[in-house]
Image (cartoon, rainbow, N blue to C red):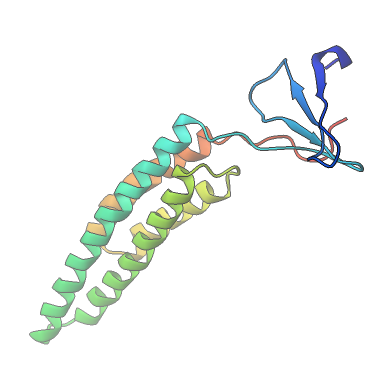
Length: 164
């Protein structure tokens, strides 16, 4: 980029540091110049990232209901002293834990996370929830996995470090 593409916005005394606006690119936010360093302020989340977060929220809510059904089935199996009932109860609790984590990570993504970390954690959570949550929860964890992939694709990461 050339110097002519950057415009410095003058700030009054005792105000925030001056902001440099970039005319050539709209994929990152304005660049704030401090006395010693310059850094890029992250911009809003993309539509794909928000859609992935919303899909993950829906998957987490339905996954929670599926985990409750799994817990009820495990409880009924325990009441009749069926073999392997404790395994079903453990899968139900695993489903509850990973469904709650999916809801939290989906909300973080829907609100506009600026890094790919929540999306990657959502993908890991969906895989672990499908394995450790039981069959009913696994169906909704597939939906959560799709939401995590959408969020990872849609996240724009601004360049790190000082801008010269």
